[in-house]
Length: 283
Image (tube, rainbow, N blue to C red):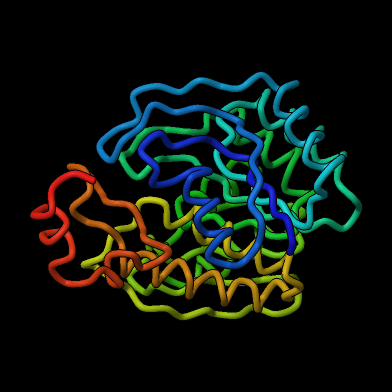
């Protein structure tokens, strides 16, 4: 069984971050591992606190799993600060050459909290983009990275400029770019690997719940790379899995945006099962 590592932040509400990553890894049939880069005090409404993990301990976590279990692919999520970005870049040197790396440049939580400061954005452009296999920003994140690199980023987010953004980000070093469609009218991902530009269409689910959708997408993509899929095929599979998870999302959990449900647990629940359990009393 392939083993895939998430280097990301923890979501105490269980909807995004490493919690979402581990669910997505399990959904895809790979063994999930984690190197915690930050701890958040978070629920569906707000992020009330962030605690950065010391860089040397991030490296230690990666070394521990690399030396014993092995790492077939990596997903990188919330990093927060430039020091953390530099620690992750150091940790990547522990991997075997050619290990696929997927970077989800998490900048803002679903609740609106900023999760990546400006120096960290510059560090990602300089330290990580030349090293990764696939980067998976949404449109606002793609614009910020392109602007940070002095590589443009103005224009209509619903027009052909999204394809231009994919080209601009690819020029910064990643082997492939997937600009996700969650923030556009058309729920279409744009894939570019330097040769082919492909549009990956998907349905929009306005009645679903999207907290953790980006984490789920990037983790599913990394899992499929570990399973041997080509980047474009992995991106197609990730789009489908993340879309289904939004469709099946749990809207009634918490007062804010609900989390995705990558296992479709609410759809599979038997009608009336909760009422029958409640009537039976405590276990």
